Length: 266
Image (cartoon, rainbow, N blue to C red; front, top):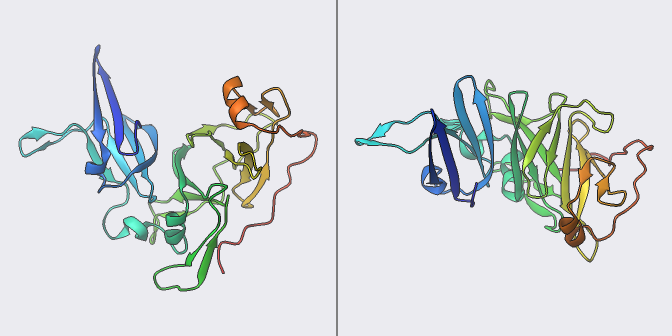
């Protein structure tokens, strides 16, 4: 993903390679990209393209069709089509929350597709009606995290609230790129999301957090010292110098404590 409306694609077949840059706005109803995830499903090679509104489009790398006599460069189709597309893909209040979470990521865990939505630190809280037919006020708090799972067999909205990550841990980098990790270390906790958020300190910078999908609670995971964080994170010297203002001691011998479940409705 080179820009919010540009996607670079490179193909390699039998020693030959080709590359192109796709204008995604023309293929995705003018929507801007938030994140992408690559998947090989059998012989099919696809890229899941998540927009800033929470819609997901599927880019087929090995499927090309002719339209009006011309061979299309790529094939793109919505993951959820018809009446279940758009805001209808989410149940209330997530159709509203989608509009107030600026940081969005898409990730595959064991073949299951998830979305992670966050309202970044420093953005403040947002208050809006819970839905078109529900005028109760919904509060989306600053730094709040939401995880949704794609359920293709659901009778209603296809994106449902996730209760776990299939036992996996997911890391979101400072640029919101997602990586799935199989839990095989005592340092990691399954069904947890490890991510970065803006610090509340006046001088700015970032802090590491861990979010438990089951309890919906977050806890800080701050660096010990010397560019190593307990030891789940390693900071490059230049990034550490410009972004980590005040390293805080963290005692790994203590259990992780989670905050109370945040209030997403009123």
